[in-house]
Amino acid sequence: MKIDLAPMRLAITAIAAVLVSACATQSGGSAAKAWKVDDLSKALAASSRPQADKARDADRKPAQLMTFLGVEPGMTTLDVIAAGGYVTDVLAVAVGPTGKVYTQNPPGLLRARDGANDKALTERMANNRLPNVTRVDSDLPAAAIPAGSVDVAVTAMNLHDIYNRDAAAATTFAKNIYATLKPGGVFGVIDHVGVVGGENAKLHRMPKQAAIDVLKSAGFTLEQESNVLANAADDHTKGVFDASLRGKTDQFVLKMRKPK
Image (cartoon, rainbow, N blue to C red; front, side, top):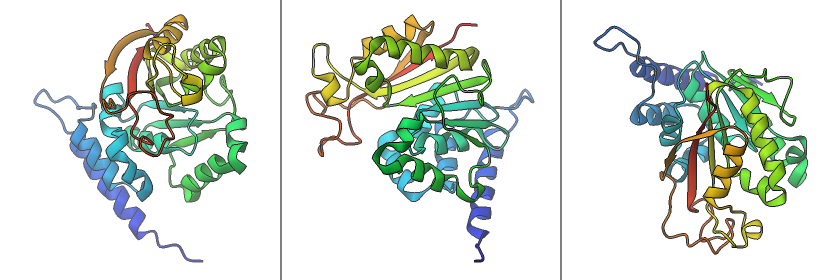
């Protein structure tokens, strides 16, 4: 079967044009590496990302998140518990062809739901569509990810599940990510807001302060918080899969730093 590569070439050309624009020299003659939100939004829209991913961008605001976390072209990044790989695809665009993305999943998650995440990730990476992405199907620490090699790690809507099962395991999880990061590296944590004393395990939520405490206990410092995914209409009493809230929950975003 002959595969028409023309659309992919056009998408790559469009991304390259945006990258050149984003990295244009400034008045002092130095290259501007940092993304601007508008430039990254254009690159994400122009890329060969699945249309279903692009449809989710209005709620997930990937350009705002990546710029908040400081993801830049050429960086080495890690999508922790990537599931089907939505964030992986975003990172692949944000770091560009000179960067690297590790997409990591525990084997148990890949086997869950009849292997739905495994199938989704395999399809996402088919035909070498994401050449700057390395798939890591193992728990952390992983031999495929050298210790102290990652600039930015991200995990989205995962910490609550670990914490609600075992708070000590959540600290171990955070320490394992800490070990993968370079000194000065960033760990971005996104999760559903829960309330102290609420039925957080049942609702798949966690209090923001609980997340901060876990991450600090692993050695991270809190550098900044963002309300880019806040939703005042979510009163934190419904489960995150409720039809009225799915994809639109009130979420906290933490930028944690590994000290140099």
